[in-house]
Length: 82
Image (cartoon, rainbow, N blue to C red; front, side):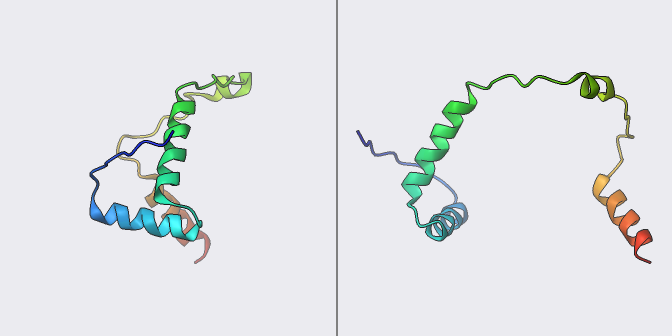
């Protein structure tokens, strides 16, 4: 049984979602319904087993709080392609 739902969203996001739906040849209602179904399934998450190797490596790397990974990557790429 279909039930009407009223949502109050930012106009920009609504327009983006409409374009997304149009590109995928579906309706906005269908997208919202599928997203709600996804959320409902996400609540029944299956615990992922962590392998011994990952457990051993977890916490090995400690970065400074001001470390910026994007900046570091950019610098290394600039150095690599000089």
